[in-house]
Amino acid sequence: MIERWKAQAGLAVGRQLRHPSGASGRLVGTVMRFANRKPIQAVVGSLDLQPTDRVLDIGCGDGSAIAMMSRANHVVGLDQSDTMIAAAWRRNRAAVRCGRLSLRKGDMMALPFGPKAFDKFAAINILYFCDDVPTLIAGIRRIARPDARLAVYVTAAESMHDWGFATTATHRHFTRELLVQELERSSVPESDRSVEEIALPGGLTGLVATARINPRD
Ligand SMILES: C[S@@+](CC[C@H](N)C(=O)[O-])C[C@H]1O[C@@H](n2cnc3c(N)ncnc32)[C@H](O)[C@@H]1O
Image (cartoon, rainbow, N blue to C red):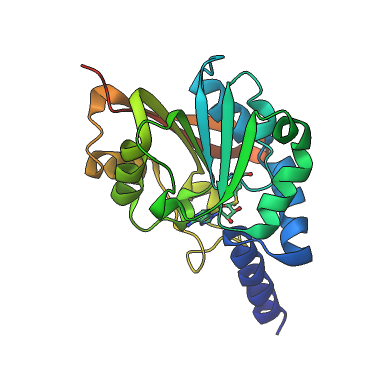
């Protein structure tokens, strides 16, 4: 009985992580903010932001990563969830008001932007919800400037195995090998990509992948 209740509660949280909505979604957003601090720092660091950069944060959630991107010229946060777009606005309202940040509701599988729109892309904790990484990366290529950079974070499958709130019913799990394989399937050559493991509190392991998009040479 207790096991069944725990499984149902886990599934409900997993669904909220995938598409936060309402009061539960806001709560999940707050928890994500604290849990994801180190992964966000790792991705923002690997983007090497420059004052001229236009950045797209794909699946921006409550805008915690955006708050660390003040070095960039302009940031766009994209998310499918109204609840998260509202939370990202609240967290970053000063940047929105001074025109350095725009927030957009949309689907990462059909990125609603024109060609050469961005220099840098962040994709933090969202590949779990992507069944077709090559199509996602093809969409990124379509809107990227030459020599753009993509940085991705996922928690390693080995660390997620025991999480009742992120089972394979709601989340795709990535080993290092699967992440490399997906970059290969997306035609990112070995010379244009890296996948690093990072140590997280509690003995957990994260994976940070970077890829050069639309290389000049
Ligand atoms: C686990 S949260 C991660 C949020 C944030 N990137 C972070 O690491 O704190 C996943 C976010 O991706 C968004 N998301 C999931 N699938 C999406 C899709 N197809 N298009 C746009 N956003 C999506 C969800 O709405 C949610 O806000």
